[in-house]
Image 1 (tube, one colour):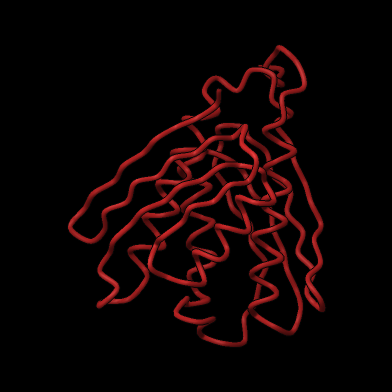
Image 2 (spheres, rainbow, N blue to C red):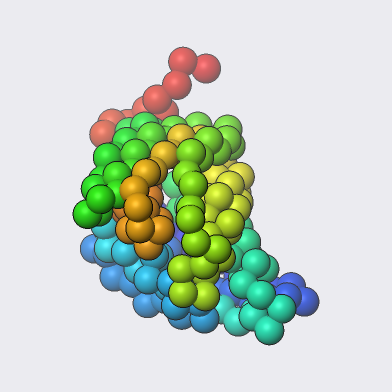
Length: 188
């Protein structure tokens, strides 16, 4: 099975994460930031990954450290669970609407990290979640998972835009990690 367990403890956060890429979408997530819990639960469900996260952090400062470190840990867990990447589809894409919002995500699991995100948010926060941290979360995740992500979203409601983005990322990942063969898809 393609699974991983990652722990990260710093002066600012303490995170334990378990990931199963061949799961059924079971999420058991307690980060302490309700909106991020909601987004990662949605991600797990739609990617059909089983994810368990337990974390504590310095939320008395703000949510930045916890969001960043969750991206680090999830990215490392994805990279570890993929192992040598033999047989995976490698590329994934998805276009997901949520009411008036529409998100597009295309990605390449290539061991090269890059993020392009085109998204504007009107509100500074959705719940306790600072909308500036959307890009930071995906950039940190891409860096640690070593994947290239191109994403864009538009709409009127920031909650809908962010949720559509996480769901599009989920479906793109689901397609990219699918086992399709017995080789690594590369000419190198």
